[in-house]
Length: 236
Image (tube, rainbow, N blue to C red):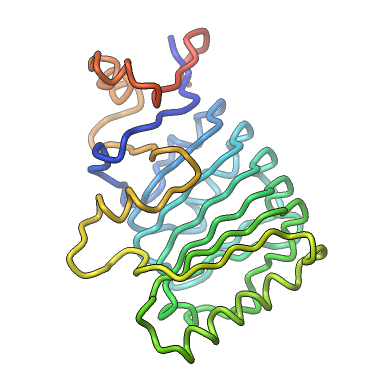
């Protein structure tokens, strides 16, 4: 039996994303790295992931921004050190005590949806272990005054951190985050993750056992260095 610790796929394999976070992902207790793309996210979805006590790196891509902010609460994600959140809008807020071990934060959103949420409620100051924050803002052809306003608001939120002078901050403008004309979803996904990992793509129609059996039936895939499994453990 195998327990899934990391499933890392090459960019050309990015064919499917889930509509939302599957409930059974919350049972992958030994999962350390999860990279997943979903069409939408709810508070319940984040609550499903926060129980993964072994998780150290999470890359979460959300295709459509929710109507209300998603709150990273002060419980769960105790081992998480790297968090990447990609969405058309910066829809997540961190409350006091949230993600207490996160050292690297990678945010990606579009400038034209920045005002959908109050920039004063990001809660970046509550990420007490934060050492590095990277932001990619979509909209290189946006109005210069709006670009200045968006970047200024983000930097103001960052300066609220208890140790702003020691933070490594990298803010860059890029093309649109999801939804650029003439680009398909595969291309968008392939360019989102600079953490060095592919995406944990969850195929519709496969349960957990069936998913793993499917990949183990492909000898060429097993030869890839991107596939990391621990053979002495068991799937839950």
